[in-house]
Image 1: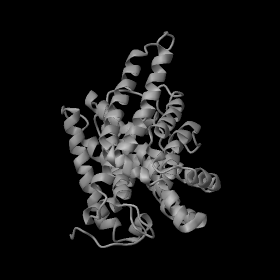
Image 2 (image 1 turned 90 degrees about the vertical axis):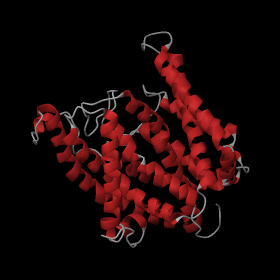
Image 3 (image 1 turned 30 degrees about the vertical axis):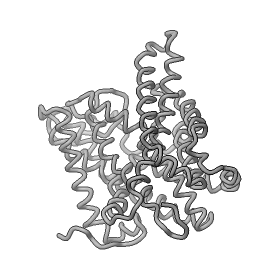
Image 4 (image 1 turned 135 degrees about the horizontal axis):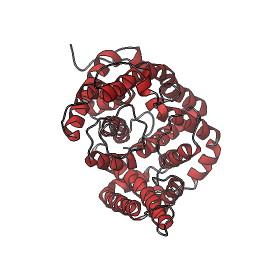
Length: 382
């Protein structure tokens, strides 16, 4: 997998693409899960706890794995192109797409959100703003929050690059995959997560950076940055990938037990069970990081035309999928179908539309150059 020069890291490219494409699943289940508390674009009347289960599992690893990989590839760019080259590349691939797609997200998602709230409130299509008065419509970064924070991570890592280089130089081969190192990072993540009622810290779409969100995901980004300097650890993760999966699942079960047992905040069990929830989540998160990194290195380290195409398309999929999800979900608002059926329909339809629009409107156009660095030929001919 690891090579000099401009060799691609096929396994990690594909893993990053899978995590981004999982946005379809993650935001799809958000429309049908039971637990309250999130200000989503749309919440269907059909709900199911199976959606909560999918949400909890994917939310444990999806963005942490993505930010870990972002740190890895940022360190790669620093090593190959220097600080200036890394910043130039990340500006072109992160900041420019953010500036292009944020206004587009506002223009598309605002009327869809208002329409969805009208359909839920009245049963008819309309755009009465009163029905969406409780929603944040403009003053937020929408699903592009991940680019917003990633740009900050890039800036910080460029500033502290000399310190990171000294830390990296002291790493022994296999250090990043050791139980001690993973445990330290998991502990830090657990302590940060303990400041939240859920034991983990999630997205924050405000333009004012949230210290908790920044710190939580920067820990994952930092792990990836250091992993680039200790790439022998990737092979260790591959050899022990299934063991890491067992650790991840057991830790997640323990964390959920802590959530169930902690009771009222004023009760005697709340603090120890909340810490169990937070620390278990932190360990599960980093065990999942090691599992997926090892799994993809073990089985997908070779070049594949289909894998490369999927990797190239993932950026567009993540940027565009929310609009398709909501657009497909609204017409089914009052159909008495199970949440699982609706979720499958909107997810499959969204995936198809994302790939078709990528192939027709993005891959061979200027958008393809913005997202992937160059225009490429279509795979599917109309």
